[in-house]
Length: 528
Ligand code: FAD
Ligand code: SIN
Image 1 (spheres, rainbow, N blue to C red):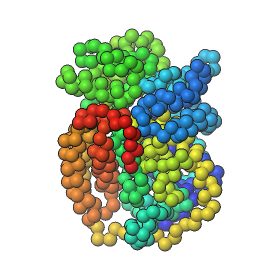
Image 2 (tube, helix red, strand yellow):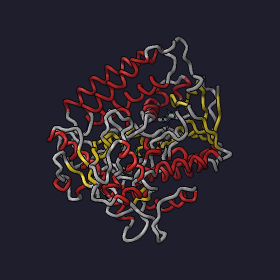
Image 3 (cartoon, helix red, strand yellow):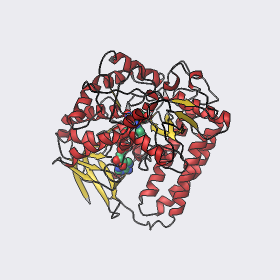
Image 4 (cartoon, rainbow, N blue to C red):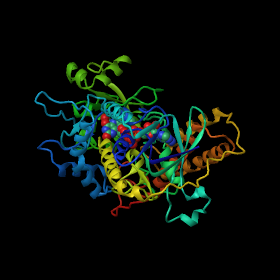
């Protein structure tokens, strides 16, 4: 079955929805998303969205904070562009119905998070992501030029490769003609032919044992783009959020927002001692990579599985009004955060690397754009500054829609694309193998490619990943298409890219820390 659309948007988090709303002014948009429309990392965002709003804050300071966190690998032009566009994009979100908390005097109540010099985080209580996601969904659902297909799992991007051209023929000029996707409910595989394809598939958290990401985050977009031969970069920079609630078995791990530390909460080790001041002058509000490593070190030093976040000195009424979601969640587990310290542990949270794009969101493949967490725009460098990713998604959705506006008139559909061929395959019966291999992948990545790395661990990971890769490919080749095996395949692919890029970086920088190279090289190397 072939479906033609001007814009094919893959994913329905903030990046996909915002791009869809903008692109719909220039053509017909089809959104495909692998689960329900609101299933996304976006929905889980707590802290908020960063933007300079009032003096004494100013653009240069937000730029400086972003560059400092990024540890020498940001693209400064991109940082400047994103930071200075922020107030305009925030205004648009508000026009679309998003509500941010205000003070009695009518000004926005701005939060502060790690690495930020000023209060500059616009937020909606402690569930900003849900507010944004639901308001955007409302707009998208009511737009006459946007079609929404939920439970549609994108399998692969379509390029000349699917016309039977050898890879060498099109290596320098790969063109994207759309994507194959499976209707998960019926099993039918559809061929989507598009003029522009917008990849907005989000993050990768589920390749690790503990993650703040919901189950949709399996790195599908990065793996699809990699298979299509797009440039992928900076995968070694996986951000671990320092403070997920320690509650073994809970998946995704519940986040305790950094804004709580911005509000005065302090980290304490298992002996009840404050420790962050001895790791960084900014103490509990140091950049995330430093806080996560400090916690990792304290846990290892004391042989324990978590540290504590202490908010007991903050008045109960303040905790309940500013962090109602966290207050209730902890209470449901018997932790009254106004009296009890919160057990916390770092968890895989965000991928700074991804599909390499330029300042318009264009990838190295013609007619393929990428935005949001799947993309590597140059904004974050080696470590993302808190609350810069929702911002990045809206800025790049805007830039990509504008850039594609004129392009779209000159692109024709490629109608010779064959439908998906699954001849000779049979129903996958060994689901238990898939779950087992997923667990193994998570173990490998957590134990060998986590917060602290070494050459020995990385080489070991690579060897184990190769075995998993071959075992999975064997099952994949002989089975009918099934979402779970495709996700596993994608996740292994992403694990491999992280490990390979980690091995190539012979230094420690930002989120990548290798005990065999505990120093930073003078020359910054942008590896891709
Ligand atoms: P997502 O919101 O993850 O959306 C991806 C979409 O793609 C989903 O709809 C998914 O179903 C779909 N998809 C994936 N694969 C496929 C496929 N194969 N086929 C079809 N569809 C597919 N950032 C901030 O700036 N501020 C914060 O306060 C903040 N807090 C956070 C708290 C938590 C707990 C988490 C997990 C993240 C937080 N982040 C925050 C990060 C931020 O939320 C994400 O980076 C951002 O929302 C990503 O948006 P996105 O649109 O790129 O991806
Ligand atoms: C948080 O609220 O701590 C998460 C913010 C982010 O990931 O940007």
